[in-house]
Length: 64
Image (cartoon, rainbow, N blue to C red; front, side):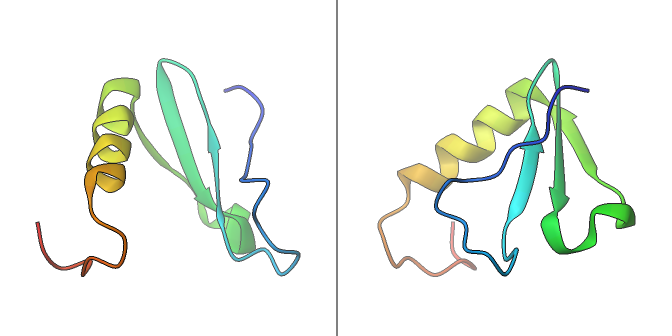
């Protein structure tokens, strides 16, 4: 996989996730890098981001 990246808005206590982009997208917890990673297709990652960013700010996580 390519280089792991995290948001430039992340703070120094590593409270974020990292991603690596390509045909397969890897997602891992910065605090537990050795715990493994979630891998999804680039299309599934894009769909998840589209869904997340289409929600109004402050919307409850448990609602669709």
